[in-house]
Image 1 (cartoon, rainbow, N blue to C red):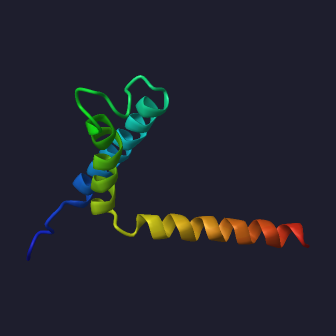
Image 2: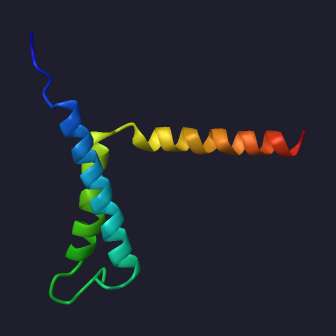
Length: 85
């Protein structure tokens, strides 16, 4: 029997780490503790704190954006359905 290429526990840990990295980097950029652009590094801080973890997250879970949009749409439909009843 063949082993899966990536163990499911490891995959979830990698996904959690990338989401934590994305959340932490977003907070650092929004709080301006780390500027998005510097004269010395250019756009490198924004890439490493925002775009790199987003790429890792989307590589591990490519269907995540569609799932989030479907979840949002179903919530909106339920809310409008409740309002008009």
